[in-house]
Figure 1 (cartoon, rainbow, N blue to C red):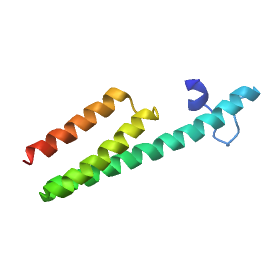
Figure 2 (figure 1 turned 45 degrees about the vertical axis):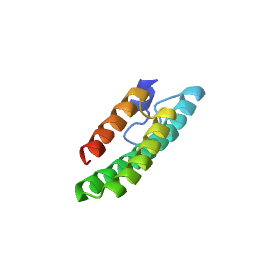
Figure 3 (figure 1 turned 180 degrees about the vertical axis):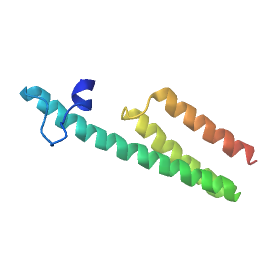
Figure 4 (figure 1 turned 90 degrees about the vertical axis):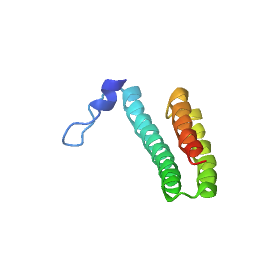
Length: 102
């Protein structure tokens, strides 16, 4: 399946796959990749907002943005975009930053 994704198109824009199911898999993978990319981008944006709040020193804003970031990270993991342990690790690191502000 990875080969289909990596070599799905030739340079001229012509599909490499000849089998109908392989062509469908190419389309499905493209759609899933776009969704996963959007979810990761959203997650990184919330993490960035939290980091900006921490750097500004505003603990209340940091706490609110931590809650928002945690929610988005957990949702991204539940959709399968990132692994559950990776989500836990990210949340843990954000919590450590928040607790250091105290």
